Length: 146
Image (tube, rainbow, N blue to C red; front, side):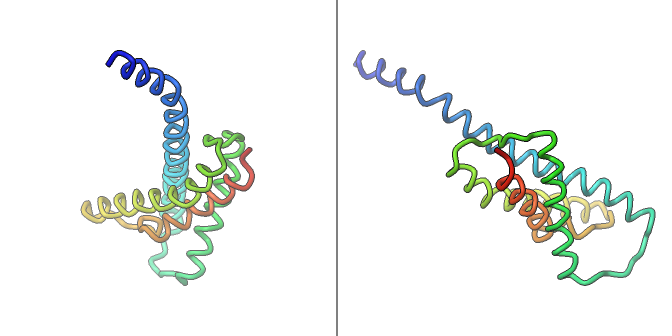
């Protein structure tokens, strides 16, 4: 029984730092993308208030715009975080696939909250546009972060 506990402790000591690194990197990338979307939305809300137009634009052009804005914010994030927070290639690919989905869900939850409070919604307050924004950011970070 003593040997079992020694092996268990050795296993935990050897693999726990690697597990923490992977989870920390993934959580860091998610927070970075959600934070980037939040800053973008805050700035965009200010611009919308300044040029308050109630007319809706073309959804396809809006989708392209959010993807492009995400790429721009992703490029700017490289100035702060040049290195990827995730080091293994397989984990970076998983991050590229899943983080935009999580960020899109976060934006849809924020949109539902704002709707319940009677606040005006932007397109980024939905899953689809939040996902596209985060996808643009994730693609740039995946491509250029070392």
